[in-house]
Amino acid sequence: MDISVKNLSKKYGTQKAVDNISFTVKTGEILGFLGPNGAGKTTTMKILTTYLSATEGEVKIGSFDVSDNAEKIKPHIGYLPENNPLYLDMPVLEYLWFMAETQGVSKENIPGRIATIVSQCGLNKEKHKKIGELSKGYRQRVGLAQALIHDPEILILDEPTTGLDPNQIVEIRNLIKEIGKEKTVILSTHILPEVEATCDRILIINDGNIVADGTPESLSKKAEESSVFRVQIKSPKPDELADELRKLEDVSLVEVLNRAEGKFEITSKSDMPFREMLFNSCVKNGWILTELQFMEASLEDIFRELTLN
Amino acid sequence: MKNIWIIAKREFQTFFDSLVAYILLFAFLGLTGFLTWFFGNDIFLVKQADLGAFFDFAYLLFIFFIPAITMRMIAEEKKAGTLEVLVTRAISDWEIVAGKYLACLLLVGTSLLFTLPYYFTVAWLGPMDHGATIMGYFGLLLLSSAYIGIGLFASSITNNQIVAFLLALLIGFVFAFIFDFSASLFPGGVGNFLDYLSFNTHFNSISRGVIDSRDLIFFLTLTALGLLLTERQLAQRNVID
Image (cartoon, rainbow over all chains, first blue to last red; front, top):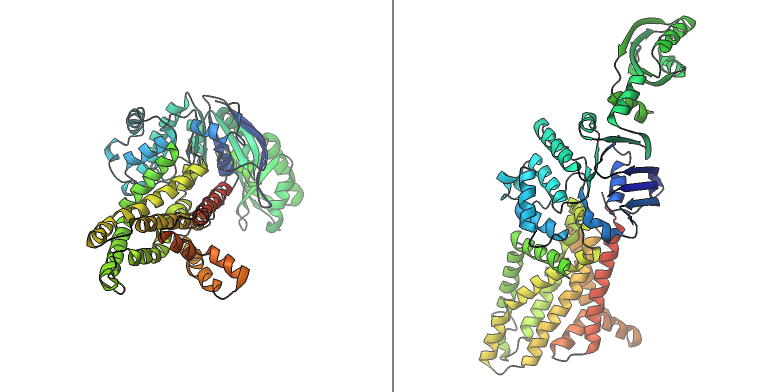
């Protein structure tokens, strides 16, 4: 099942959480939703799961419009909300049984589905315990199991790896990758290596807008196109330095590392031309350049460049 | 219908897992037992083979106990965030509300079932008006049904169980005592109207053994209104945090 979002906006009162975004996700694709906290990731996901309704725009899942076919769409969606809410007083198996029932799995199929999911999510040792007695990592697996219990075609995971240790993160990632082969998966995160490792496509969202859309490779390529420099400049007027640097052509981001010592991290769209420009403005303004260090730009820099301005 | 039952089953199970059910059953049976058989206007003092005393106490106790049953129903799920999982499942908001209502009514029904020995004992002690007694039970169930509707609504507008409890209790008090009391203050139409709104009026009328459609309509309308408002509240998705 494909997901298509067209001109989606969501307002909370007067505040715009999502501002006119459009994208599509195809079956078999794992889409990584990236962005700083409060960028609108969770809101978008809540609209996709029919939990919230959109203020404007159209969201289609398969051939159904989310706004008036919620009951037809819900059986096809597996959803792991942020913070992974669970009934802590229920034993794992009972909980999964209940979740299967509420998702319309027929009684004969429930034991089979539970057995599959329990082994897939590595819950075998803990399956008789109450959820409240489990560690955070295991609770996260229960959350994932809950989302997968009815073998949904669409999987929406809001920060699925928060609170897990590095080994568990790798396991969950592999599980998502494995499952994602036949399903449509959207996962949100603000951990960059995670999307690089798991996703086929990345959508960077900031202030309710999509600021980048591409494969991890294409975004890395974009990262290579821009260069990051660490510079230290002595100036008679250190306070104005940052603003002066921002005025330079090609400069897309200036981060102040230490104002008093004149240390900055500059992201530029060009390499050589920027170095020359910097030299020229140093001469013109009477600055003394004491350090110029070329840093390799990563996906992380792209993310910061796109979301900090 | 199947979905309603799925929700009701889990909620009912949760009552017993969380001890709520045991505490309530124990307190309800203990208090009604004590008050019916040993204390005040008890059966041996009145020397009549009827359960009037029991129904009056049960009525009073329900005013306090039902908010305690309904308070966590939705407020807790809102607070924990589990409501979000539940409403995005292949189940409608309406079925969720109905399931929770049914579970509460079942718990109340269970507590009444345990008082059947009172009935058999009294029937054995002397000649009993069976019709009035059965209607008394029926009246308690109707009252509970309406009050559960109110309690669920109170639970749906907050994510704090204490607030839900107090709000339901407050509304319950108004219906059980305030309307009844103020009806006697106003003569004529206003008084009659307030009298009509009182739980007391309808409960007493039913437990006398007379079935009157006005009483039925009153409790059923209140139930429907409570559930409807709860469903509306759920559909708004006002997650308070």
